[in-house]
Image (cartoon, rainbow, N blue to C red):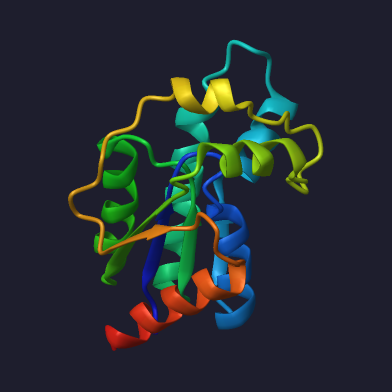
Length: 170
């Protein structure tokens, strides 16, 4: 079933790891903004607005796959309403539902450990520090269909919860 699953959350929340595992389990196409943004950084000078261009490329890529009948997982911070609105628009214009899942880690210590030890798998992508994470502007998402705290939980348990939630919608 074609639908957009929007994963939102600050760095270190576990959203990219969850997105990868969910895509593996379901066969969904994963649109990871970090990949698009890093590719743009590699091709342009530092004055280029990578963030806006990366999100726009993500919206377009997601819409193309959605219109082809695929389930798409959008993996991005989506810290502000404008970012989330772009994903909703891509889903709406493709005639499919958008399911919004807000991922967070209530343990700053655990989030910091994740940030320090993670391998993004993206060549050239610089790690985010806890300080960078804390300085990001975050707007809560009242439209989130599911809010998931990953603190102290395995990726398998969190992915199981997301799958149960998604299955309850069909």
